[in-house]
Image (tube, rainbow, N blue to C red; front, side):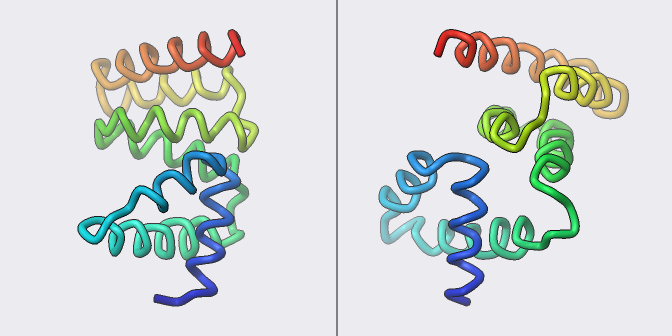
Length: 126
């Protein structure tokens, strides 16, 4: 493991998903899934998000569309919450869900809208 890239990954992951989520995932890792947590943090967050070609907001938008296309709605909800931290607006979320509906199918867009409504309602209540 590249310690420098891992540390960058932790910083990037924390900036998007929040300290509680990231530290919880890393602290809850056990012998079975710890190697995956470390590799994913280093690779996805250190290598992928650590490249400053795109800003965090743009990466969040790209991730939301790709994760929706893969129909990974648990991850979509997680990244939707993170996208709020990176500055993605509700209008932008609505627009990207429209794109998901066009290119990935209406059922995927319906799921995204359902999740977004619940997340935004929860955030409004805070």
